[in-house]
Structure formats: C-alpha cells, structure tokens
Image (tube, rainbow, N blue to C red; front, side, top):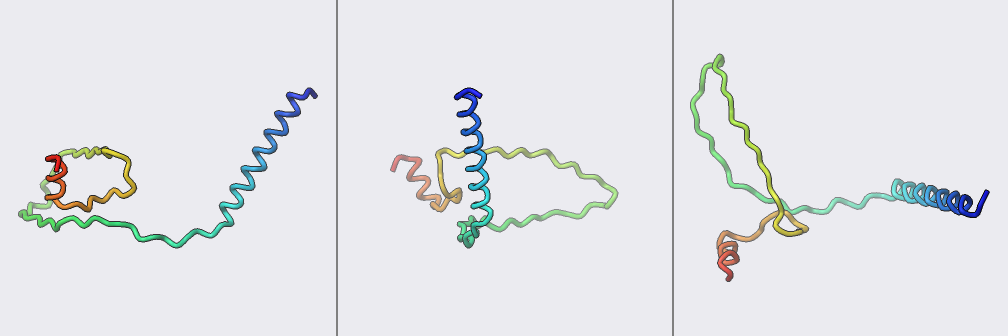
Length: 92
C-alpha cells in the first residue's frame, strides 16, 4: 500500500466517523420549543352566488400563482400599511 492509498483510506474513514458522530449527536439532541411565528390576517371574503342543478357541471379556469421575493428577508409577512408602501414607492 502506498502513502497515497493509505492517506485516502484514513481521510475516508475520518469523514465517515465524523458524519456518524454528527448525525448521532443531532438525533440525541432535544429539539427547542417552537417559537411564535408572525402571521398575516387577510380580510374576510364574502361569496354571493346562486345554486345550480346538481346535474350541471362547472369548469373553473386554471389559475397559476407565481411570485418572487424582491430581496432576502427573514419574515415573509408585510407589516407596513398601504400609506407606508405608497411613501416608499414615491421615494419618501
């Protein structure tokens, strides 16, 4: 066995042993109590419509919702008022 082969075997064994210890420590560690999350409350929506016969079929259009974050944020909830957003958009 050459020195290169011996070194590779030692490095591989060390990585496997370290990973085993890391996973074992993570499994044994108790999880912290859940923290309170910020929540956005949306306004109430009232739907008004008429009943249709049970034999009629309704086909709704497909809706695809996509979005991006403008910048990296820690909290996804928007807590600014409409007035504050308007001031920011106008440069104020």
